[in-house]
Image: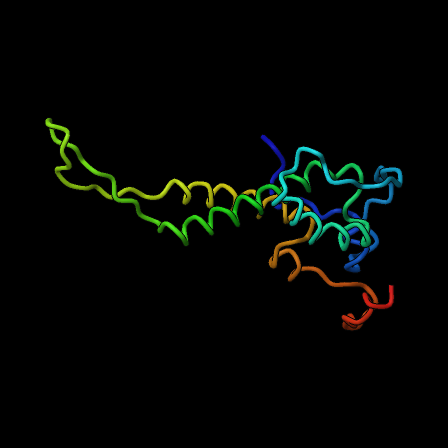
Length: 160
């Protein structure tokens, strides 16, 4: 049987959010500082997601060279999710499939759920699972506090 409960927060997120010192693993292996590049296999639409999130995650130390593959999976899933939403919006959630009689004529129609619904559901699950690993879901953020005691000034990012 595997580990139970929610996946543990990354140490850098624990530090950023002011977790208690006795709950932080100070012996965790640390990846060497390295340039983080978008994987060549990542589709163009997923690269847009990468460019949207990666700089901020990297500046906070959450995205490292060791995390590239997992983050690329998140980006790919987010891009597939966006495509599925677009397709469902354009073509609808239900398809009318013709029913043919013995002579090859249309005898009626049956309704079928769009296959894009399955793509959307699978991408949603991946976005939630991998996004949580990087602190990208609302429920993860709601349980975290940034250290320092007070509220964070959103203009701080402009100064760095």
